[in-house]
Length: 326
Ligand code: DON
Image 1 (tube, protein in one colour):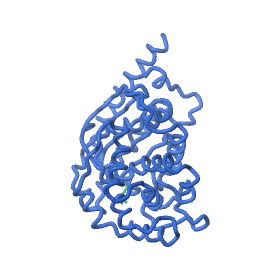
Image 2 (image 1 turned 45 degrees about the vertical axis):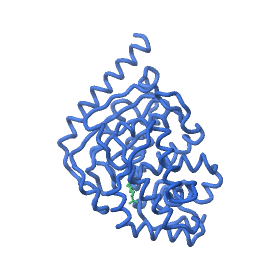
Image 3 (image 1 turned 180 degrees about the horizontal axis):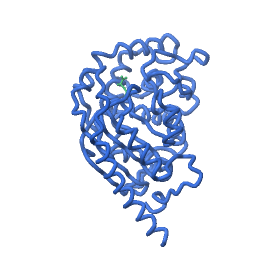
């Protein structure tokens, strides 16, 4: 069989496995949508989508793949890339390190030894990164964020203003974190404005299909799989992938790296995006969360796909034909 024919078979296999996993886990009703932000508890807990986009743009979509939900912490990954691109690694590392914390994502903490936030995937690092978003006022800085999304998606996404208002109304933990950062000299003295941008960027509406496309672009070294345009520099995607692997799944990151082995980021809206370098992006959307804030069905689907397709980064004899043929 030629490589192309073999690859085609793998793609068809991936599609049938995604359908199978969707059927299998659609009945799993453990966990519940996030409720610490009241508006997030209003979502239908049974929405479920699996989406894959290969490095050449071929896609498989199953279930509610066009249903919009708030991106939540997954945007932390994109903003980290933007900060690296805009300010350079050195300036970013001065403010935010790359050490996994093992603590919940909203812990009120700093890396005291280095006087910086521990990593960009927890709230303290993400708020420090949000401070670096350029623009003269909140509106301009939000525009900078939406322009970033547009580079990946080819359109400006909407913002869920109800979720954003709910984040604002219940965001005192994030305010505590931001003032701790201000006290340590990590962020500028414009905390209220930076938090407005932070709440907005969490409330950007995406679909599972969008997340898989974003994942595929990052996995593809920053080149958009369908337009062929460079969205982000390859050395920046390398750093994004690294922190996704070590810190992207909150205090579950170690177990995730061990069992799934795919750089990934999750959000309390129920999305998880995974990036298989050189191969493509995978996304799952299901708002029922576990105690870490990760989508329960999402974790199950990633575990199964990683296992069946040898997608763990360190699978020695990994057959990544999905990449070559896609
Ligand atoms: O800071 C917050 O609470 C949210 N806007 C982001 C939450 C999130 O997804 C973090 N991890 N799950």
